[in-house]
Image (cartoon, rainbow, N blue to C red):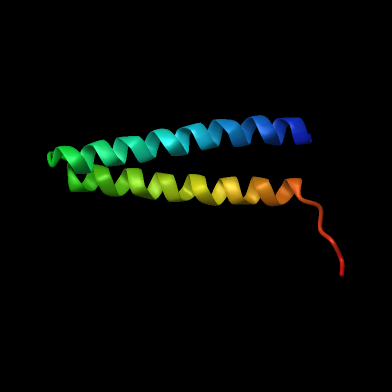
Length: 65
């Protein structure tokens, strides 16, 4: 995967992460959110965060000190 591919993937993941955050907020705010649905959205958001962290680490070269 090229750095450009990683950057594109990161942007898509960040957008999805932000959208999930807004969806979770809307469910919580409305008070009608299904707890199972809310848990699934939060779990997906955490997986996205982890994937974003892995890709960000791939962009930064290891520096041996």
